[in-house]
Length: 521
Image 1 (cartoon, helix red, strand yellow):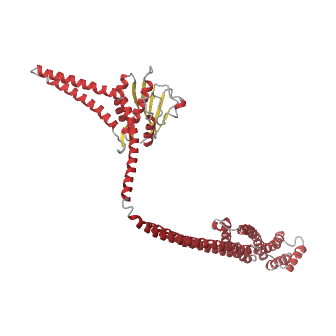
Image 2 (cartoon, rainbow, N blue to C red):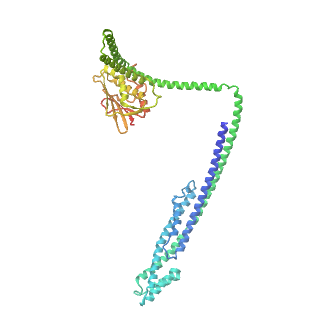
């Protein structure tokens, strides 16, 4: 049944993609054809506007702005970027030619506007001059020249042009104002130029190129549609084959299931047993890994055992001595010094508290706390509890152990794991300095802006460069056989990394110095 469901879901997805792609394809095509129509209409609008403006004394060219913007957007590909995607070389060449011609056409339109302004100004000047003519003897010559200029402006035919030119030649110096003559010449020049620009603009071959582009596009569209149709048919065929294949395999699976049902009645039980065995094997591997970590922890703790035993034995002796004294006093004296008894009992109470603190530290350190939730703990507290486990051993070997801090800080961590890291470093430092004349170990806490830095420095002379890369590898040790597992630093690195921190060796220090960095809370 699952196979049938997967097959039907696959067929449904393929059918959805088939109809979806067909809809998007047609929508893009319709948008493209509308754009072609818009560009063709814009080109025709420019021609019509130029034809209507060539004899008008106007400076209003607003009707030219929108069609020019439409064509520029088309050529700049800011609106129809998809036009040239997957198109033929013929389309690309035609597109480039069209945009080049339209650029030339726009430049001609700008020239037309500038020249039309000059032409308009000349006409308006002559109209104003004609209206202001008085009774001077030169009026007739000026009127004739202006009238000829107006005739030519309205109908720039060769005869009107010839008559105007002849009139200009026959004007006697001083009979007509020079500014009138200059404006008549401007009309003669600009009118002919405007006609030439109009003809140049209207007769550009952009219309043919638009039709060619549309033909190129439609040919590509037809080819793409045919190819897409083939692919859709192919997908439909594949879907059908997939559906039939699922049906056929389902039938075979049902038949095979019936044949194997009798022989495999206990298959589920065997699978369950095998799964349980695999889970048990995985659990054993995890247990062994955890045991390896705990072994390293117990190894570090074992090195402190003698000091811890001595640390407990001393207060026990004190308790025994005071208890014996109190018994003797009770046996030999009829009267008891109550205040002395209270002081002795207080001393015994403080001593038992001291023993309980040491035992609590041992129990806390030795337990597996990896499954506990992380908690916010004082670093000073972790350091103090770790020092309680090893300070007697260090004291007996004349190793000075100091903790330096400016302020306390807190870590979100597993306290036992951080204590194990610290104890590993302290044990390594102890082994390194116990045969030196100057024996000291210093743990320092520094607070930076974003980090908490814990450094462990001892009076050793550093670690040789050739083994610096190896000391953090599992099972690598420089200690004698039986005195080290080679797991301390590698396990410490893993614990620190699991708390988001990092550790490293400070080669700039003249002594052996390891630096541990944690994010500051």
